[in-house]
Image (cartoon, rainbow, N blue to C red; front, side, top):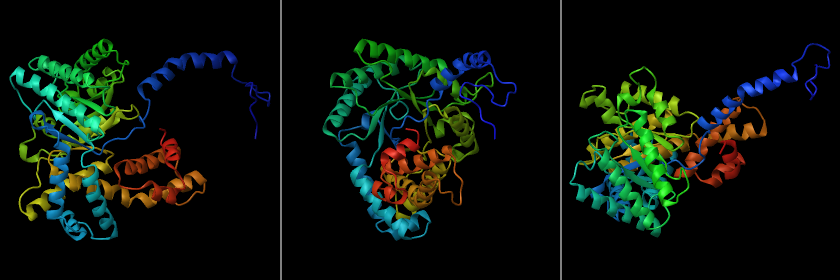
Amino acid sequence: MSQVQVDGSNPGGGASFSAAARAAVDALLAPVDADLARRYPGDPGTRQPVHTVYVPADAFAADTVSSWGRQALEAFDTHAATPAQLAEALGVPADELLADVHARVRAKLEREPVEDLRIDFEDGYGPRPDAEEDAAAVRTAELVAAAVADGTAPPYIGIRIKCMEAAVRDRGIRTLELFLATLLAAGPLPEGLVLTLPKVTYAEQVTALVRLLEDFERRAGLPAGRIGFEIQIETTQAILGADGRATVARMIEAAEGRATGLHYGTFDYSASCGVSAAYQSMDHPVADHAKAVMQVAAAGTGVRLSDGSTNVIPTGPTAQVHAAWKLHHDLVRRSLARAYYQGWDMHPAHLPTRYAAVYTFYREGLAAAAARLAAYVAKAGGDVMDEPATARALSGYVLRGLDCGAVDLAEVTGLTGLDRRQLDALAGR
């Protein structure tokens, strides 16, 4: 086999590329290299919560997280006190896997019932007198600061403001200003601070929020880019523009590196497509289309995805709760299989099935994923020939399971021979 010298010459004496041609290629592609690095930085390497809990601003209190945990445990102990009862509710086998999941779900509800909480000043709050919303913005910021200080805040917490449309724009900006200023006055901004911009229709509305945050950071002496935000996809214009282009990609670009997530709004989006109320769901075809466009637009950008919610609430007699739980469990599992690793939960009784679905998803695939990772690292071959991209996906799967408590590091290391640092490296973090 012929060899190519380091200096680019061809030892066989045939024609070769000139240094000038190579330099021209580098010059041609330098802007492309820079654009790829800017637009597609890859996964941020941080924990992604498995859900977001929405609480109206007027209902948010110092004990909201603990109250949700208590209510979730009460529902769990009333309607799924044993693994067999949970299996009956979900329509799955009552096996060792489910027994393990049952124990882990209960421990999670006791330890960390809420991973991400959004205090809602939009649809869940509605129009209020300005003085009332001003007071609520200050009050909720003070409560968040206190919870962060005493360690009772969930890992991620923030607010959803009103949208950037003319009718409510000033109100949304004022609420954001009061919330951020009050939070900052209490100390450094929380690491897990998350803002949500709803009902985005034009990329310019995203740019508007970027300019506001730039101004706030400059005036507050914060590092540029410190404050990011999620974009909520609730309108048809956010998916397909009037010119036929995928608008969501333009919105990610308009965020100038500040976009942290794209959240699908099940009911607003379905309604905007004319879907009647009885058929508005996370698994409707219009939802699948919108989320597929979001998924491709966000791929490689570091912007994460979240599915929406179900509005069927698990309350009432056990049969009714079980029916709602099965629906929720199946929808969450469907989202996970489609690489939507986050969703919304609207009621405390949704938490048991959120974690049951998530934990089953990660535990049932752990052994196979671990075996493939071990074989990949050892270059031992096996039943499946995995490439680096698949190794990244396998590592990401295991890391998500670790982050939410579905699996333990000791068992992962025992199965793969890899520690957390090595898993992060394989995942490209």
